[in-house]
Image (cartoon, rainbow, N blue to C red):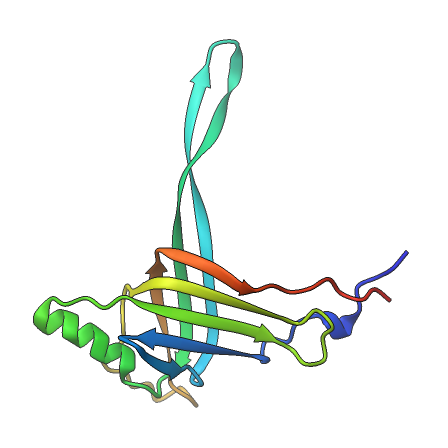
Length: 154
């Protein structure tokens, strides 16, 4: 029986992320952590002859957060444009996991129509060695452009 080898576990530091905003590609080298999840929405129902509640998928919602070093004004400018003009910006975000020591290759995920929920407009913290910020967002579509392969078992 084979086993999963430690070298195939994907390092959290081995990856890249890009924001594609109005046709401009911004490498997100200042990102510390990006998480995006799809939440399945379910409706519940009851029926005669069954005491339990049943559930049926009724849609989904894409949500996420990113923790970034406080080293870019990009997201503040997007929020400022909304505040001043009412023009909201939707953009795409590409997240690539690729650890060169792993035999499973890379995974590329494209989050489409990303929209910020919030943005820090200013920040100071005398107790912080490095300033960072957490930004929540939603997205409306997703594609997996590259998929991990199967690992070579030990």
